[in-house]
Length: 202
Image (tube, rainbow, N blue to C red; front, side, top):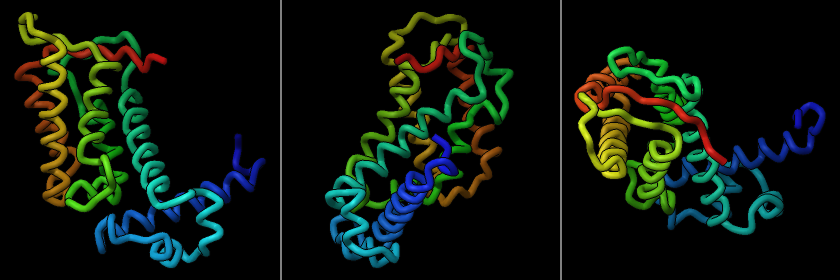
């Protein structure tokens, strides 16, 4: 529903966005377990009653933040692709890796991966989401069509990509998006011949 037609919904979404951003900044400042609801509302310039309209506690806010960002990650992947269309890795261009642009655009959130006392579940569910994307949205073809266990292949490739992403984030996004994407494409050419986007299945 259009927020202009539903100003209450728009206001609620803005409030939630402010609370989420406050949590992100406070985790970086003092660690997740030290953050209190009072810290969050003070940082976001709201009162406790406003917080409790939206969330029963900090745990629910943290879960909503994590789920919304990882769902956005899943949704970002398919934008450059046509379902059922095969793309050869030697033809891949920067727009093919829209997932990298999504992470960079939301880098304030993804920088939380650099912290030990961070958003609960982030360190496990971030790479699991990449594997889920590979399993549900793509069909891969190996170089020379070499037969492999495709479950293992997707896990190997997904966690390898996650490792590169994590290194890029930990290094403060030192390489530009374009430079990082090109490195990923060059590596992909060594073991992936083509990929076919099959879309999200309900």
